[in-house]
Image 1 (cartoon, protein in one colour):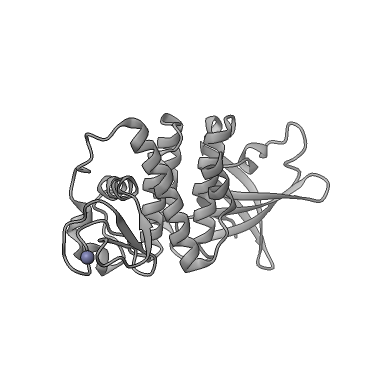
Image 2 (image 1 turned 120 degrees about the vertical axis):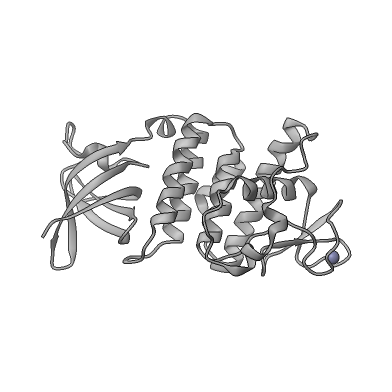
Length: 262
Ligand SMILES: [Zn+2]
């Protein structure tokens, strides 16, 4: 029987003469791999659905546990994200993280919504370093069950000022007296805090984060900061999130590494 799913293309690999194997993220079935026959031929009807960041309704035929895409109707092609190198890498960071944090046959609705939303925002806001990417990464790590907070020092309870530390084990910033984890600048802290404030109030899977109102207060307290300082903070926040994800998953995150070094 045919299976029909709204899905986002995470990656595609060429095989055979004209075919592609695609890996997609769907809400109900999590990650799903499928063959797309003949899509590398010029003028192939389903070529669009094998392109990076394609968000479409895919129809699959199943045989012996293997899927083949037989039809697709486009929701969003995110064409603009494919034509400019910084936007391309920013969008690739989104699909890379989705790939890392999803599995076959798992419910992945919130991650899919978050990813498609981030790609839409990035199309409108292609600046680099991109605050939309910081927000997406922060939300994705929390959806994956890794807490993230930027409130007062969770060790001694003091308000954070000056140099901070970020505990890679717990995902929380702490003060320079407690100094647990890796050093983190004020701009890093405010970039993460801004991302946490921007994430909507959708319930998160971990209790730790919900209990920590400090990091979810509105406003960054950083309005006086310059544009350049903020941009630097976004880049540092992405480095910190890369370290945090790698600490827990050992994933090399090549797209994010590339984006940071562009
Ligand atoms: Zn402290």
